[in-house]
Length: 206
Image (tube, rainbow, N blue to C red; front, side, top):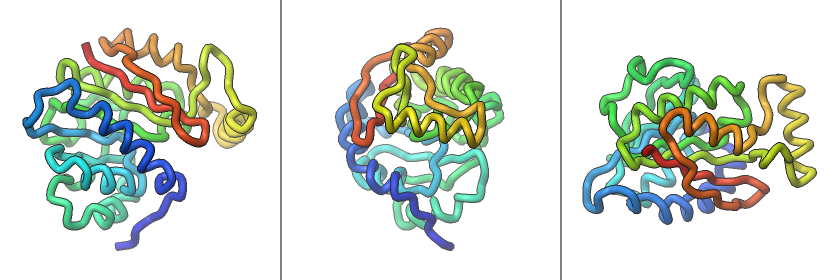
């Protein structure tokens, strides 16, 4: 099995970890075994890194295709708190997901929203509202537009590049995501500035 490598994932894993340490276990009962479902795990660099720092959380990696599963498994080799990766398509109802536990404490989604059509954002929030426990957290990470404006210029260029690849891709506006979240019983909780003009958004099921 061959590990795939993402330079971006390698750069941002520690800044994201700092934020997870800030929010994880803050809204759930301390000492209980918890479950984090990662949507769109990619290479597996993130989940393997985070699992080492949260031994009391069971991590469930996933992706929409199984092409990266061997890489995820290789990164997570020897980690007893990481389940085998599963296929999850956010456009399908969570009842169709092959996940053992239908109720989780955390849903984590890194660098997916801007490289998928808007329908995937709807699917993410709709399904997160069903699979999350009350007060559970959805954390999303990536570049966003704010109140219809994209800054800085590098993100403007990135947005254009994405739309050249697929017109349905591109940075999504946080205000729009808030509306989608609200329709699904999820509230905006916090916004954290991150390196490379990214944001980490914390959402909570109410």
